[in-house]
Length: 328
Image 1: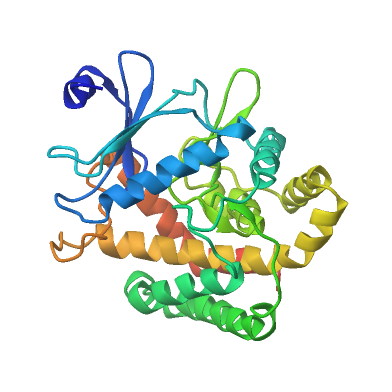
Image 2 (image 1 turned 135 degrees about the vertical axis):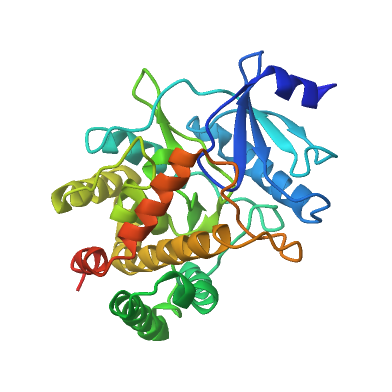
């Protein structure tokens, strides 16, 4: 695209919903995913090409937008952009369209793994790798983000249980697949045919499919996007898992079954640490020495307030206890 910045100016900017990228619908009908980055960020190009490779690898499943072009980082566009198909549709209606999400996850999870050396990251031990992410988040953000001692104690207790589980689970082989990692329902778009397209591929890696199942159905995920806002009943969550296991075949289902609850608990902790980082970093002044700092400056005031309220609710002691009651 010869003059991409001009094409952006002529396009329709869509409401921002996160800190990693924005969207512009171009006049030709396609979508530009604008990667956010600070000027001269040395990691921006690698992140852009990693995401582009994810779009290419997942394309055969027919459940992700088609990638057309990669726009390299440049002055005025420090993170670069990807040009993809625009998917006409809306966020899933829960619980009615859980099965459409299940079908999409099953299609994507059975894709062959990318070759070693691919830009797509690989976790050979997803339990250990996810626990490491949780530990790092806890060290950096938990005390600053969660000021209620009782709520923080609940989170720390769950983290200690996961550390004990790691003594045995982290040494066992774990079934691997393409993992999408950010499967809250707001990252799916349901079209007129009832197909649930997964549209946010920046965190795709080789890892545990159990993370995607958890993140799609945990209360912290299903209330994140304002167009979803539904806490699922236990029977609805169980039906989601049962439907998925039937679709992937008996052998894969039997391999994955022992990991469903441990990875669900660990995914909840990962989500809590994500929220802790969001609260701390978006509430702090911009630090030029930290190019990884998150900012919610691109969000509308209404979206900022919605997400801050969701995070505050997720950090309430009674909310945490109600979620942990599922497995304790």
